[in-house]
Length: 227
Picture 1: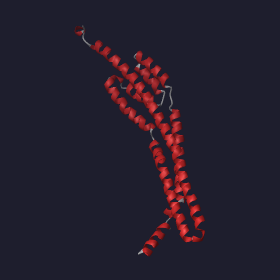
Picture 2: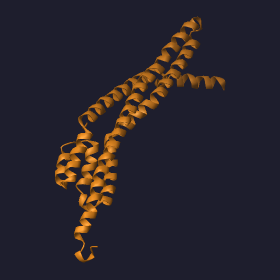
Picture 3: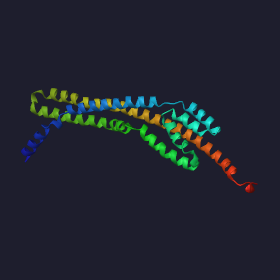
């Protein structure tokens, strides 16, 4: 029975999956994908960057004069999370502040999903690359002990060389994960700032709509009902 078990183990160790080289190639591939995502997201955010203070000042000027169409045209010049969310509510301003508030909440979720695109994959690489590297290390140690069994005369060199080679996988896994973690946190922090800026512009729009609504109601009321 022990001989059969030993034979089964030997056959399993002979399978390509128990070679650690493929783990290194996998980590290199994940590193390339990770770097690609970082570069793509960086330019994505850069192209959609706006001066939110200037945008808010321009929006306020149009809203104070009641020029909702002019405000919409001003925001339509930009393609950013902040302006797209407010623009969606601004084009439906006639529905009233309550309806606009619900509409911009839905638009915010859509825009946030657009700006979060590929970030979950980056987070997956960041959290799993060390484990993949550790898996490669385990495979390398298994191979080192397999070589030790096959060549007892050079036991020390076989074990030390195999373990040193195996630890490369762990190092590469960490090398892939650390930049991915940093980039993910940076992008998430950037996205939070964009969401906060969008909330500020939305509050500006809703405040203007709520201020206009009582005036419109008084103008529409019959003169006999006025105090």
